[in-house]
Length: 165
Image (cartoon, rainbow, N blue to C red; front, side, top):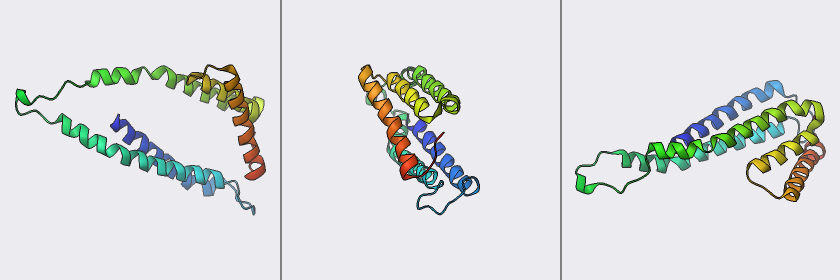
């Protein structure tokens, strides 16, 4: 899993650098205190920092994993039985259906937002994500999805002056 953390951290870093390079050419600046490039810049720097932290946090695990992979000198010094790659792969595979569902929700959100608008599409997407990640209480799903969509809409429109679809 530590190798996956390094890969994901690297993807975060590359993505954020690409976005930071694109922002000056794609987003027009205004004379407001927080113009349209403010939020993508903050998010990009946040992803950059998270990518670096993810890579740094996975280094001790990689070193430990490498030390465990060194061949044993004698049979009497054998280490206790640990999960092998097959068991670890099985554990990782059980998350695939959830990953596919999250990707489908994101894709649906991407297409729906054009037709039904930000508030309704975000409310539906948040509700679906909460259910996928195990929230069973309908009142909690409703409350969190409506509040989440409403609060972010208010923040973007009234504080950042960024118009949402």
